[in-house]
Amino acid sequence: MPYPSAELVITAGRAQRQYWRDLWRYRELFYFLAWRDILVRYKQTAIGIIWALIRPFLTMVVFTVVFGKIAQLPSDGVPYPILVFAGMLPWQFFANALSECSNSLISNSNLISKVYFPRLVIPTSAVIVSLVDFFISGFILLGLMVAYHFVPSWRIITLPFFIAIAFAAAMGVGLLLATLNVKYRDFRYVVPFILQFGLYISPVGFSSAVVPAQWRWLYSLNPMAGVIDGFRWAILGGESQLYLPGFLVSVGLVVFFLWYGIRYFRAYERTFADVI
Image (tube, rainbow, N blue to C red; front, side, top):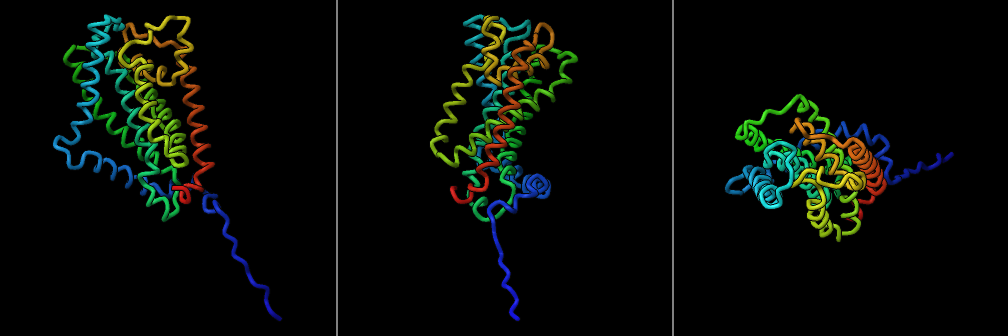
């Protein structure tokens, strides 16, 4: 009596059933990608990692001259260069992370098309690399504090909390743009515009206290406004105040973008190998 033939059915996405467990299983790939990007970033450059210091420093100088010397905007009772750099740190991290994260899938297309692993590893490693630049740039802030004899208050211990919010903001928007960049390559031209526009509407070169009170809540719809205000509240202390309603609005938007970014990324993740 003949035995019935067995059928093997391969369904797209079945390998991702244990997706979140696989993220831990593929942690070594995450370490490898992050370390590779750190080594490659400044390879064959004359001054290497010093570029991570020069760019934010020069931007800080320009903003200090324009907003502090020419426009004579208030500085919350602290030296204007420190005010600017306390806002420059989270913005520079967000901008670098968003740029790297949005292009991460395209730049690793060969890896994606050949082997299965949780694709979330790639954009996350890109954001981690930008976090390394963030800590390197922090030495400039330490130098400014020493030069101006500025001593931070107890609020500095809350800084890791605001770093986590900045990381979540970069991840959420980055995952959304990374997915859109795979589907529509036009977004590689959109991201630089978003970052340039965002720099001007975010309180990087000035304190958000100059925004009229009746518009503060609307201004807080820019998630980075709350993140930057949080950094300044933690670093500057003294007269620096945190506009709590606006901060909560910004954090709420960060949480929403992170949730939606992960959901949108996961929805299209199985098609990356075919489209890319």
